[in-house]
Image (cartoon, rainbow, N blue to C red):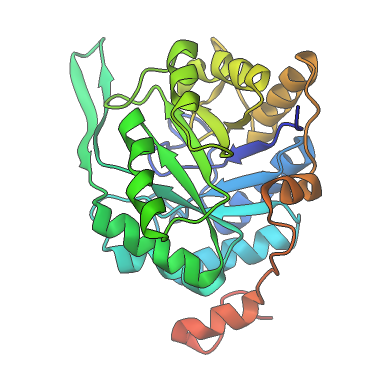
Length: 304
């Protein structure tokens, strides 16, 4: 069985410090969390950009500053998000084209996306998460041109099936990398039985990881470890080490995930081992200063 690759999703866009004080907002804070996650055993960090007040941020200069701050601290594999509601596709891909991280998240289908409070009998963050085939193809072509690995985020079985025509067209190329997101309202339930079905639906030879939401994360992590898959933890997906015990950093969550791996007989992949396992070892890392200058400002935010 291959070594388990652990990803840390550092911040997301919905969670706030009112919910969890450890949520990072600024590029420096995000990079410090990346360093903590890598020190605890994460080989990949998944990153959204935030404003200093905690809102979503799609400015190229913010992503460039995050990338530079992360690289000043760790050589961890960087995976930038492209997922958003109400943001034009061109704005959602600009940082991928310019900064060329090793990986970028790609949402593979549309869905109702909401958080429901049974206590209040009310929905929160109720919206339609739209990802048409036209948009998915647009993102894939841009990622291919930039030499960036698409990490296909699938919230339900149909999203896995959406890969088939894109493979047939040749716009989605192997090795295929899937993230199976489970437990989001509007998507597939977060159970081991459903995870087995999801994995059985993947194209042969696919790399995959499970992303469990809230405390469902931990039994799904354990199941994925025993099934030979990879895992994602982090404050974007779950705040808690166990019921009532909130993590103080992404590093706490990664530390528990790596301990679960070892307790269940799987070794944890280092950053270099993860690159080799995923076929990323030959990817040259970009000149971030030059990429920042290309954004049209003439001087990158992290130039001295």
